[in-house]
Image (cartoon, rainbow, N blue to C red; front, side):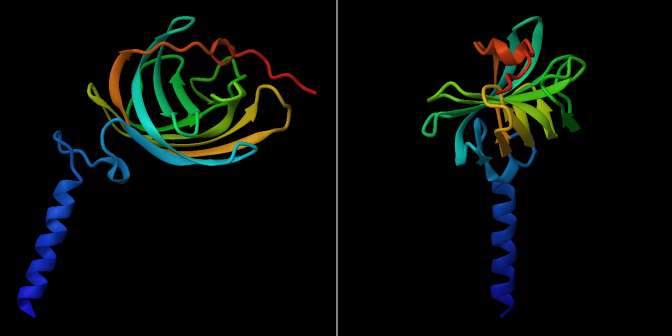
Length: 181
């Protein structure tokens, strides 16, 4: 019986070490660097997983960005800091139409081109370093095309830092007002 307990402790220790990256940080939810996973629910309803990148974008100035792309479901989630670099901690994801908002987000359905701008939410960043960002985002977003169509996004990510990231969605980054029906 004692041998079984020692083996169990050794197994737990090995698995705990395997969940750490080279810098000693724990990878979010066991995600490998450069990956994300989560859920989008509401008028756009799907599980998402795929490529996670971070860097900066030159759209009306420089913005730190996190770009999460599911090429299978054709969904892209973008989170950006309109004022500064991302730092560890909890941040409020603000209404994309608030011109004083700092951390903003949007989702794009890559099949239809429909976009959803953040209304409210939270961004938890547990590890921010030159190699990438680990964290979680939970936010609610409204369609930029159909007034009153909402989605909820809940994603975990572990990005790979890519430097300059080209974003071609100017309506959100320029914070244009949503169209009403």
